[in-house]
Length: 316
Image 1 (tube, helix red, strand yellow):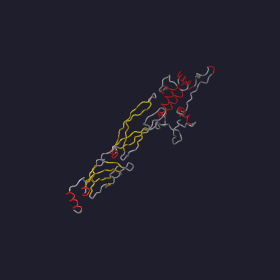
Image 2: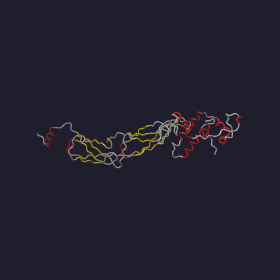
Image 3: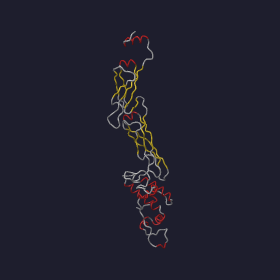
Image 4: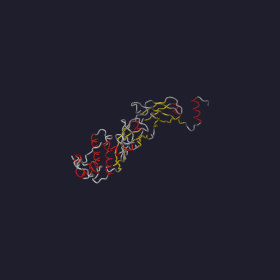
């Protein structure tokens, strides 16, 4: 199959040097083996893109390619157009440069003090000591969750939009739906990262998209770490004589807590293992803490005062 280098770079035959450079950068970022580590196709595409740019960016080789084709350029049977006709034989031979060298040359390798590294970017180095491709800045979004979602776990489908270069290199907006599985027990501030799902700039790898958990206020419970706090008001009579406190856990389970003793204002009842799930310790939960507020009557009649004195042992 005959390869059309112009088609490989997605440019027309009148493309300028700047057009070629922009096209190469855009496609090289897309097909670089570092971004497609498990794809043999990507490596082949990356080499083909680099080869196409290497030929078309050289005026002599481009002219021979345009007139006679790739095979003529490879076999070197035609003289370089820049040489005089009297210079004799010895055509311009095809020079297949290393794809990584071309990438390093165009992505700022010369700005790294002569130490461009394998990938030619003045970014951080990987574990092998080679330069890595620079990434765009990460994008953070809030992931608002109800207490019930954080208690039971759930799946959220989140629609995102991000800016990436199109085939012509112009910024365009693409939309995508991401699935986020919420682990029971996640807390406010938990971060979920989707690598390279953020915005992308020309000449850089896409940034990461980071979701940060935000917890909605709950009408009944307040979260305190792994504990759930439930406030209950009871009357003075109930504080003195006892009461069964009934409530429903965030997963819908009914709970009954009997109070059979005299309760003072500010008393707290602790029920182990009925709080929030602990995400790092499956099967374990924090505590349910019931904070009891005693509601005192605003007024008492003389008869009520007399009765209380009699019952509580006070003098009449």
